[in-house]
Image: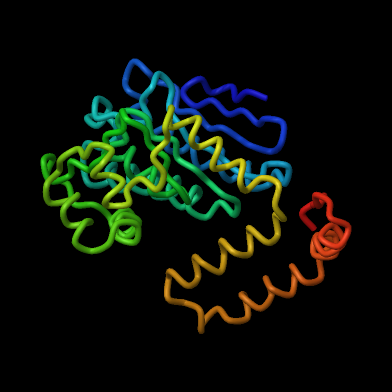
Amino acid sequence: MADQDTDILVSVEAGGLAVVTLNRPARRNAVRLSMWRRLEEIFVSLKARPEVKAVILTGAGGQFCAGADISEFSEVRADAESGRIYEEATERAAIAIRDYPRPTVAAVSGFGVGGGCGLALTCDFRVGDATTRMGIPAARLGIVYSALDSGLLYRQVGFANAKRVLFSGRFFEIDDCVAMKLVDVRAEGSALDGARALAAEFVDNAPLSIEGAKAVLEILAAGEAEAREAEILKLLDQAMESADYREGGRAFLEKRKPRFVGR
């Protein structure tokens, strides 16, 4: 299946892996306002497709994403009012990716900078390669990053490294990205191949288990475990009462690969 919007391509492969590709290689996949809105739509729609077990977010032409398309700012981000509308669209896209319930992997070849770095940070994992360059040049553009974007950076790289990224505005090569944990896995080949290998570790496992684990970890990261205890217990009960829980036990005893159905 291919998406009809040529700026963003979507394919769902056999085995349940979806690949979402930013497709403006001539602009290093810089994201237009319409694309921020489309990203939200795509991840909301993928959430409703249980056959999709994991999603890779990548870019065409050997580049992940050079950030927002600044060439359209004079039209879509010209004043405070239009700026708020623009920021709302970017945040809704970020939240849709962050809150997607199954594993997400950003395959970051080439530039993953500015809004592109932010997109990578919305994913569960980031895979880079020898070409990877990541950073946020906000300090060079007179921009203050939102609480959402700053928070995604902070929880990934820590306090001091988040300051380093935002204060310097520089682009970091792969070794620095790995050291700061901007990149979780350095691929021997391309970032996309590495992302596929990582996603392959997840797609055959029980969907309810993975979705529950992701939800609980997000609750813990937000410091809301006590306030959302009932929600956590519901996730545990749902898994315990599922057909997949019974199938997992049978498969273990019968020494075979389990056949999970997601319920």
